Structures are given as structure tokens and as C-alpha cells.
Amino acid sequence: MRGKPITCCFTGHRPSKLPWGADEADPRCVALKRKLSDAVEAAYAEGFRHFITGMALGCDLYFAEIVLSLRQRQGDVSLEAAVPCPTQADGWSGADRRRYQRILRLCDYETVVQDHYSPGCMQRRNRYMVDHSALLIAVYDGQAGGTRQTLEYAIARGVPFLDIRPEEG
Figure (cartoon, rainbow, N blue to C red):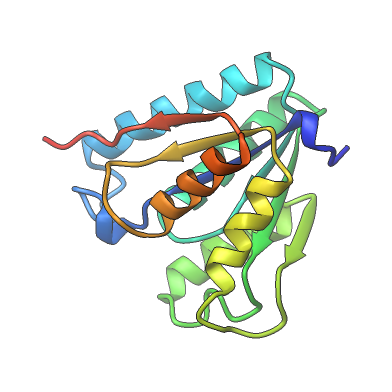
């Protein structure tokens, strides 16, 4: 089931780059999650059945939870966690680590990109996701960083993308 033609991956900002931070009750976050859910539903309607998340805080975890919800309704959906290294969540709060572990347990596949942290492991994870996908969904507001690098890599590889902008105000 993990072939490129039916695989969609995701990139997006961490809470520190979102206007509402970690406040998921903020109406702008609720609106973003609705847009993201619509994008996942549209990808499903186009035939995408396998989804890959990088498991970072913020938008990656929103995406994973949306895909898991879709999987409950549609039995032919799978979710893959592309984990940059086994220590990805070690420095997170207890609540964030529990959320991460819960999502990880519910994934159909877990791909650990490398067995230890290094400065390039996040980018290596992002390239893995793009290289194994036929569509990239991105929550991107123009800021420099990993999301921009992933989008640029997808463009260079000819992978189509859907850009979702977070609400500013």
C-alpha cells in the first residue's frame, strides 16, 4: 500500500511559528484544522490512501490526528510516522510526549530515518517524505525554516503541493 502514486505527505509549522502558539482552542487554529481536514478529505477523494507525517509538534500532529479520524471512517487509509530519530520528542512537555506516543501507537507504519540525532536528521526526514509521495500538503506562511525547505525540495522534485496559509488575525 505504500506506493508513491497514492501517498500524500505533510509539512507545516511548529507552534512557535503559529500566530496562536500552542493554543489549539484559538479560533484561528480551529479554522486551520478545518482547512487541513478539507485538504485531507480532498486528497482522499482524489485517490490518496497512504499519508505520511513527520510527527513534529504543531501542524504535523494536527495532520496525523485528522488522518487517523479519516481512517476511522474509511478503512482503506494508512498513516506512516516518519520519525527523524528516536529521541525526537525527548525534550517535549509530558502532555506533548503522551500525545506523540498515542499517535505513534496508532500509526500503521513507523519509519525511523536514522538511529541518532544529528543536525541534518530533520531535513533527511523531510526529503524521505517528499521522495515517497505524489502530493505534499503544507501549512506555510512564507517564513524561512524547515517547511520552506521541504516545499522547495518538493518543487525541485516535481511533487505537486497544496499550500494552506494559517490565519494571521
